[in-house]
Image 1 (tube, rainbow, N blue to C red):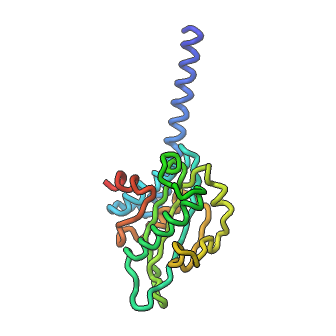
Image 2 (image 1 turned 90 degrees about the vertical axis):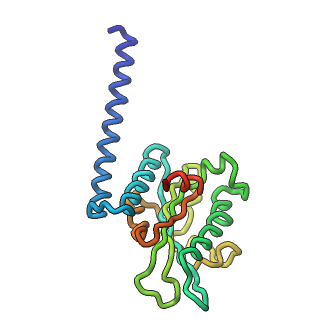
Image 3 (image 1 turned 45 degrees about the vertical axis):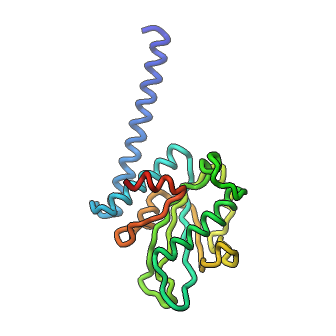
Length: 210
């Protein structure tokens, strides 16, 4: 074996060792995720596991950082809102307020801006008891690109979203903090009851759900 062949062999061995190491790590994580779900094999839990592994890979492969955002909403005076109601609230807030703030522009649909915006999953949850009509709320996992990480790390954990602006006035409270991939399992705990979740950019949602 000549010098060049030896060099190529060493490179292949190193790459193979790296792949084995990555597989070992994700197998360990998978066991933790399955244990969290008591090794359930329901359809909704399989989706939750798949999404958790997806965000885990975003962290490993793209160096994205995860944040858990919780948003509650001001109640209607005459009725209790539905999942569709709060989904509309969130989409207006996220697309018309948050993304322009994060990206520093309202022109958020260019190829570059889409590439650096968070990949976000938003799940409906409900309080066990409701005294003010605010039973339904959202948990979101934001997979944040390194180019926008400073924006999120500068946000206060408690109520980072102003509630008196045109596209945020439906929000009652908010909370954000960095998290690990397994936090998606908690955020999606009501997926069996509320199977329709939001994703941004929404093109990913259409591709992933099938």
